[in-house]
Image: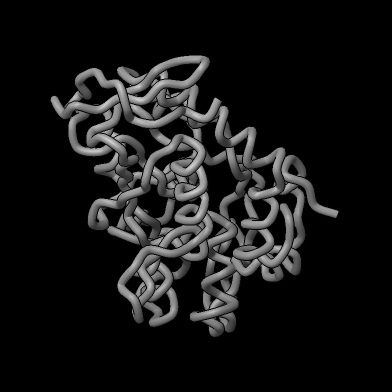
Length: 280
C-alpha cells in the first residue's frame, strides 16, 4: 500500500496505475501588496498580502498532466494542482485565478520579483538552489524522475543512453535536466519548453529518450503516447512545493496551514484518487 513517503519505491506497474508537484482569512483590512495593489489577508497566525484583493493569483506552465494542463475542450486549467490550488484559496477566503501559461523557468524569477502573481504552482521540486531565490510551502506530493523511451527501443539502460550521439530531451530548468547533466554526461542534453515536446520527440525518433517527473511520464505513456514507455525509474525522492516570495512569509504560513487542514479533512486524499487513481 503506497504512502506519501514511500512513493519513491513504487514499481513500474504502480506508476502506470497512477496514471501518470488558520486559514489565511479574507483579503479584507488591507496593506499594500508587492505590486502596489490594496490587498491583504489575516489569519490568527500571521498576515499576508496578495497582488489583487480577494484573489490568489497563480503562475503555471500548464503542460504537466495530470498535475496541471489546459483542457482542449473548455480551454480551462485542470488537474491535481489546479483543484488543490482552488481548495487552498478557499481555505484562505480567496478566489483562485490563473495567469496565462508561462515557461516553467520564468516562474521563480517572476515570483521573486513580485507584483504579478502570488504563487507558482507547477510541479516544483523543493531544492536548495531554488530555496535561495524563493520560499516553498510544505510538500504536498512526492515524486521521482522517469526516463521515457519508445516502447520498441533497444537502448533502455543508463549505460546505453550515456553515449556520444545520443540526444536526451527534457523540460528546461527542471530537475530532470539536472539529472541528465549529472548522470548522462556523454549524451547531449536537449532542454525544451515543455515535456510534451520532449515526449513527442522521443515518439518520432528525434530523441533517444527524455527525462521528466515520473507521475507525468507514466500518465503520458499510458494515455497519449502508448508507443512509449517509462524505461527507467530514478529514485530521486523529490517533493513538490508551492512557490512564494520571500517577502511574503505570512502567505507561506497560511498556505501551510491550509495544506494541513486539507490533509486532515481528506480533501488531499480525494484529489489524489481523482487524478492518480489511488491515494499516494
